[in-house]
Length: 520
Ligand code: ME8
Image: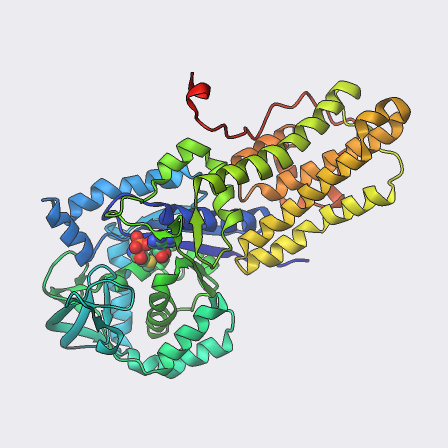
């Protein structure tokens, strides 16, 4: 029996200080593929995403637009919610940190940390980056030629001095190092692990966790002059979604304890240092894994509003199609590394991998069945060595994909599936079933049967990544919904001879360049 334990997974929650960009969409698509994979593999899954609406960055952006932070959040958060829908996300909840349930959860975790003796009042004097919403030690900053002091992520920092509550992070140095040691898979990819360990070994200072110079945040329990530092409330969103502080409810008991957080590489410190320390302090379980993906660049250039090369995810989906966009980013960019987007690359993936390799194979083989076999899957004869090798490789996909997906190697899982698609194309071309029609119809039947069976399994396994198209592919076999999960992969779910197969409708359209001639 394979493990079917409950699985909790989250994206980071985005700052709705502007419209969503492709980096946000990328994280959502990737996390969705993991949630869908686990569901299809028989696990109870809880998958969340949302918006991080407090903090100085929101407040400052709102001021620039002459609105309140609450108005800015109310304007943009629904665009993120809409994006989740447009991306066909299978999220079970969408957290907005301005929701009353989140105020309750944040206040509760604060009180739990306070009750544990980890919060005290003092005053803060140091460097703060509004863009990163992060405090930095002076040694992490540098003054550049322009005379401005910058933090390690390249954003300007400003000197901040105010009364502040502190979290006793220094007391967690050894506990965190012990956690990294005891739970080697706590964070990935491995390069990031070493960075974090050396940061913690370098010595942790207590963390300022409240602000008094602005009021756009959750009030500190017992002292309304202070609002919580935005990251204290932001990280808490993960347990808000499970009904915290109600830790005895089924949802919390089922899903907290082995969480997987998918985030970008710029916010790993918050998730692997601060968050586990807060949780330990509040007496709650630590996540099972934090995985940091890379950044997306437009033809190698960082996307920025001032350069004017920010990619709008809605536009991209409009242009190339949803599953084409999902497939491109998940197949092309090794998950965990930085990646690039270009028009040529996405057209190439769309046309080569989807339209040609999978689409054409399905349409050629199933059309032949509809035409030559009375619209029903033919009875196969004895399998040749080639047939058997093809089926064996197909049956072996699940185990390999499962292993890769457990390590968040989404691109490797897709490579595994498309290796089979490539091999199936070579098989089909070399067996020449169209020539066998006259010379050896029984053999043609076997080749068509094997090809159809490969397409069935590829369709089932492709669902996490390209859900809509995979569904259409499986519809070609009129496969019932209870035969579409991973328990039906392999020999147990083999297609039955006689399965009705009509002339297939196209599943993967080719991308045609928009030239004046084509437009006319
Ligand atoms: O960091 N490519 O919000 P955010 C890939 N609110 N990923 C990118 C990216 C890019 N170009 N730009 C950003 C925050 N991201 C906090 C998170 S979680 C409790 C609070 C990723 O809107 C980024 O790494 O700046 C992060 O994981 C997510 O998008 C939201 O970024």
